[in-house]
Amino acid sequence: MRVSGVGFFDRPHGQTGRATNGIELHPVLNIEFNPGTGGPSPSPALLVANTLSNPGFEDGKDPWTASNAVITDDSREPGRNGAFKAWLGGYGEPHTDNLCRQITIPASATAASMSFFMHISTEEQTTTQPLDTLKVEVRRPSNAVLQTLATFSNLQAKPGFQMHTYDLTAFKGQTVKFCLRAREDAGSVTSFVTDDFSFVVQ
Image 1 (tube, rainbow, N blue to C red):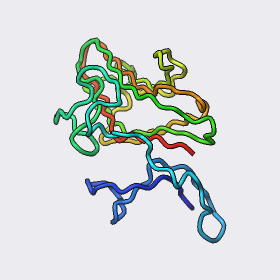
Image 2: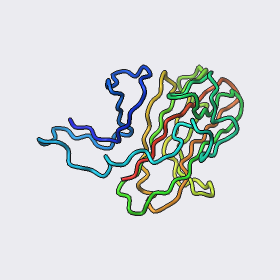
Image 3: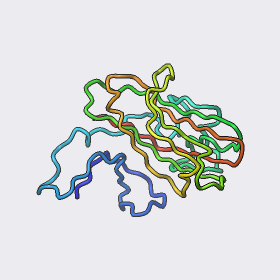
Image 4: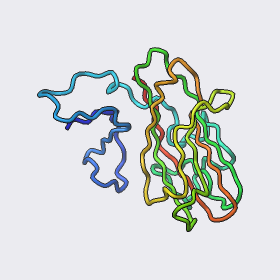
């Protein structure tokens, strides 16, 4: 099997099965089963690094837009890397949080994707009702929703961070906002902690 993706070096922080040199693929762009002999053909995707500035919020809020206190170094919910992360929810009362990043996808793009890591923790006791939710949305610059890419809830709570990747190729030639919107109800707390975003265009 041959796995291709965008490589970058990450610091050791307890990753399971990490390479000794700390290299990771974020995101994985292609998987080939039973590839032919020889090395992989050169691919423009392999030459493109993460094009987002401030992907892990360590340089402050710019150029992100976020609800009050979403971008934080509050130690009660650690980030995946560094001190800062985007913590949506965590109030246990009716509340909405937003996190957005405006991006431009070139008309010449053959592929475009956004990836990020998220940890969901909850004090909700139900195993059947999605009481607190987070939606992954593509919006116009005016904030009108173009597409909801995914919906998460208290039902997906689990230890650690999981990576999520979304194909944005359908929006090539446009300037859009990639947004996360979390809503909590009155009751127990659910936190959606996000970090280490990556925007890759091929």
